[in-house]
Image (cartoon, rainbow over all chains, first blue to last red; front, side):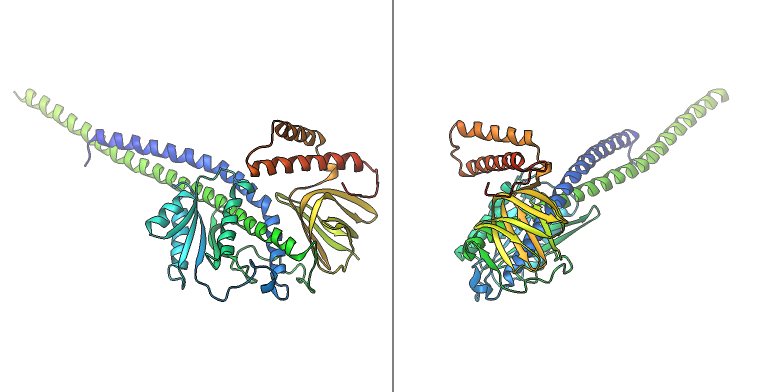
Length: 296
Length: 145
């Protein structure tokens, strides 16, 4: 068994760790509140925008409508935008995303390129020898649309240039504090029945009954809104992921704090036993010595 | 007979409800939308969205965006939108001043920065004009702003 001194040091270090994890938990708790506010604020717009995009995609002759809506006959390359955090200590948050990417795309029929959003995801992807073509790390703590619009623009550009023929988005959907779901959504070309989580609102209306009239010109309007709405979907995914990351970190840190507390209790008990034992031994020595003297 | 109207800006739902008519500042001019309108997809100018329900009118500024019209619903996706009664004039005026000061120092080299400032300036102008013209019961018919 360890000496009393070693035990004391151990207890002190565990206590220090628990202070750090508790501080991190508090920080994450305040960050998650802000992130949730941000994500719920933008959700209606993103949901409606997605809905409008879907209606556009349901128009007759969608292939000729806009290149971003057209399914390509030959799919030669795929692009996956992977959203993770810049930092660790968030439980299984980052590795869940990467594991999900691996299970979903490792056996993809065509070569896959990756755009990494977040430092952790980038590092993990590179370690797995994935083809990472772009890296958006160190986003501001509360990103605005302008901060992430470049990601969507890059994805659209790659698609328009024909470098890739389909684009997916992998992110973590924030359901509630205890539940975050890693999700894939096909971004381009737009799919009617998406894998995405942003669902239609239970048939509030029955979709377009007739073809749209466009004002001004159809192409002009589609050129403007489709790339923009696509970028918006990326933005929403970033916000969802951010809220998920903070929630995951908060839970992980709370668990760590709890574990540390428990460990301190156990160690303290063991330490007390050792201390007691030492004292008992000392007393026995003294008593033994005294008796030996008295016997003389 | 009413038509549902939803005005959503990037950061919140500004209006949601059943109305008698919606007037949109479409790219090619004003459009009055009544129930059972045929589907339209249009971009919006900086201007005023007007709704009427039960004889009462409400006005909203929209700083560009898109509107989708379906026979039973109008969805306005605005870059920024607010009810005219909610506009903080002092804030809008301060924003206009800031933007003008930056532009007075010279045009920023960065295109994105320039566009952001220009948009901020246009937004605050729109808000200030809208409040001057329409707030508190003065019901002049909407013209281009």
